[in-house]
Image 1 (cartoon, helix red, strand yellow):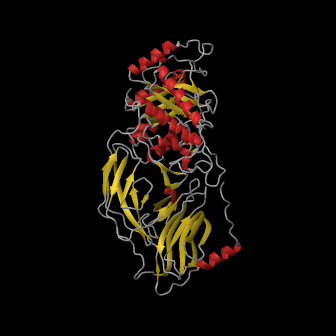
Image 2 (image 1 turned 90 degrees about the horizontal axis):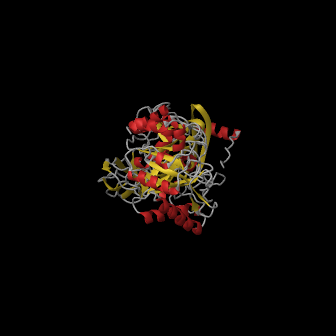
Length: 601
């Protein structure tokens, strides 16, 4: 639940007008803010959730200004810690424009101050003043917008008052030296550098990623992409501010690593086969599935009850599917597909198969029953298609890196047990809806104040905990509402733009619920496929072959991107998933033929 916007009283306006007239500076006063005009980019500034960027128009003075965009629960707060003199008077000022823009100072040692204004489309000066406490040596100055509001602009931010220089006062640290980078796996890089005297922490910078804060002269950067070169820089931090960045150091991650289920082609086509029902599209026998399909997910294994964890799978009844094969024929056809290099998985869940592993007994039943299905039919692995209310986060479960909700923790444990049982060739795929993944950029669970849908982003802890075991993630890019992308704009299904923006989030990583300290790391491109409906009958959000081709061109070749700017180019994107093989046959195999034409199948 969002907090109510504050009211601007006539008295506050009068005070703001008085302060805007400016206070005379004493002879020894100085402007203590570093890079307050943003001419050096964001040097010296820290913006929450990666919300800040420097623009060249519009500006108030010089050639640059700060543009910060709120998203979800993040109000786009940009701040800087400044060294000050105890028991001294300071005046804080800035030129701003936007629907709601705030300017303030915290940690003053007396009364923290802030002021705000509404000035869309026009620059206005904000000023406020404060006196530091008798032992205060640093304050944090900041500017921010408001939740759900458009981007705001800030320029020429100053803090004028006595210069604290002299013996005993913190001095800006020097830039770190001796930075080295070495890849420790296909998804991680180790950094080391020489310690800087007087530094209390360090910030690791990588293009296109949120800054990483560490307290020692080393860092482990994870969640990277295999066979990719990364460049890093480091800055030192203390109470006086942030140093210039170090000289760059680069490392290239090796290929491969992570994920199970080797043997997939470089570009794979994944489809769901209606093995236990017809669904109006007609039954397709396993032996009749065309060779275009590299991964065949059997839809569906379903629980005996929502909380039992006991999963059952049976072939479609003859009354519903007159042409259904016998179990022996079905198993023989699976073996033939596998002999041709195809993978056949059991998909658990689906629209009607709610699965909640709320207890350890349900977890153990899941492991046992899924294992029996895999063994009986000789399958290659498991697809997790938990939908509806299968996954949600308990109140207070706010960190995707350390989940506490039983249904999440037990699912992770169950899958790890199955992976350990079947070994490195076990294929693991997932097909969550966008609500459970990309919506996590704005909202996560019930939120810090409660009141949100607890399912928001609920797949993120599962994906993250299993990322080293994950073969493929193909989020359902259909039956979805509009979702905010990394450009902080909403994207709607049905066209290339939606799939570009949603896939870019998975391949670039993103701060969860706008929290820059909790970034969901990027997946490798070979772990990601785009999920689409095969026909207009298969689900809302059908995307024409021409638009699918545009999305693939943008993500793998950086062409046909339209207005969205991706955070990279990924020729190793694994491929496409569709619901379903049956509906593709119903539509004359349009979807699979387009895939084959694009990737040369």
